[in-house]
Length: 449
Image 1 (cartoon, rainbow, N blue to C red):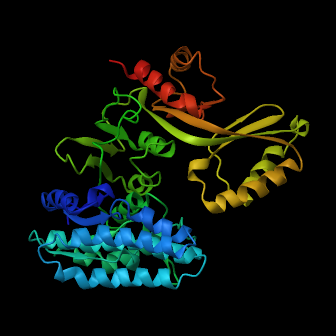
Image 2 (image 1 turned 90 degrees about the horizontal axis):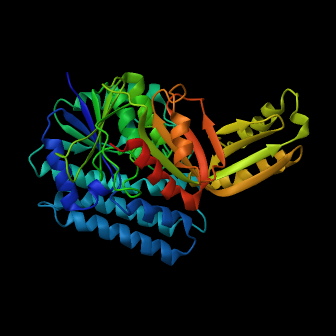
Image 3 (image 1 turned 135 degrees about the horizontal axis):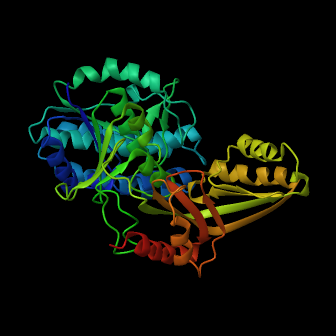
C-alpha cells in the first residue's frame, strides 16, 4: 500500500457506544486507515488494577462488576450483539476465573494478564461497531506479533521480532480489511501476557507503524492536539499546529500527558508523521509532529511534572577526587533507579527522581539505595517538589532566556535549575504548592501576543 495510517484511540475515545461510533466515523472517513489500536474503555484499566492490588475478594468482585457493566452497556447497543456476545462472554469468564483462583496476592505475570482484559474487550466491541457500519474489519490479537521481554508491568518490545511477525501475520490482511487490535499489551517468549506500562497504547501504535512501514500515526484523544501548557492551568493555553520530534519528546518526558514518552522513538527512527487530535472534534484541527517543521520558535511550550524527589549527596571526599560520581550512579543503576536532572558542585551532587512514575518495585528499591549511599556520604531527601520545563529551540544559546525566567519568577524559590545540557529545554524545581502559579506566570510572559 502506498499510504498506510495507524489510528490509535484512547480510553475516553472508546468509553461507550456513542464514543466508539464517533471513532468509527473517523476510521471510515479515510481508506488509508487500515490498523486501529484501541485502549481499554475509560475506567476499565483502573478497575483491573484495583483487582490486582486488593486482597479483599469482595472488592475484587465489585471491580469486576464495574468492568462487566461498562462492557455490556456497549454490547447491548450494538445492532447485532449476538455476533460478538460469545467472545465477550469468554473473556469475562476468563477474567472471573482469575479472580476466583487468584489467591491472596497476584504474581507480576498474573497482574499483567488481568490488566490485558480492558484492551481485549474494547477491541472486540470496536471491530463489531465497524462491521455494522459496512466495513470489512476483524479483531486481531496483537500478542501474536508484539514480542517483549518478561519485565512485567514495563515490558520492552523486541523490535526485530515484531517486524518479522507483523510481515507474516499482519501485513497480508491489510489490503482486504481493517484490523482492530490492542494497545498496551504484548507477549514474551514463553507466551505469557505482558504490558508496556500505563499509557503504552500510544507506544504500541507507533511500534506497529514502524513494523508496517506506515506513513502516519494518528493519536486520537480527548483534547484538540498538544497545547502550549496544560489548559487547566491557564485559559491562555493554545493548541500548537506543528512541533518537532525533539520538542515533543521533551514535552512528553517532562510531564505533558497527551503522549506517552516512548511514543516518538519508533516514529523518529522511521520518520513517521504523528498527528494528535480530538475524537470528539475531529474537524477542529490538531497537532502535527514531524522531523522538519516550518518554524522553530525559542519558546514552544511549558510542561509540568509534579511529585518530584530531590536527593542531595554530599561528601568532602568528593573534592578533587575521581570516581565519586561513578560510585553514586553505580548504586542507583544497580537498584534500577532512573535519574532525571543532575547538578554538581565541588563536594555535592543534586539529582531528581520522579515519584509519580514510581512503581512498587521502584519504591522497594529506593530505601536500600539510600542505605548504600549513606554508607559513604551525607544524603538529604526533599519531596513535595514540581519540575517545570520550558520547551523550545536553541535555549542553550538564545540571549535573554534566563533573564525572562528570573524576572518572571523573582519572588519564587527555585530549588534547582538545569540549563545548557539540552538546546530544547530549561528545567527547574519549585514547591508543589507554587507550581500552578509559576506555570501561569511564565506562560503569560513567554507566550503573550
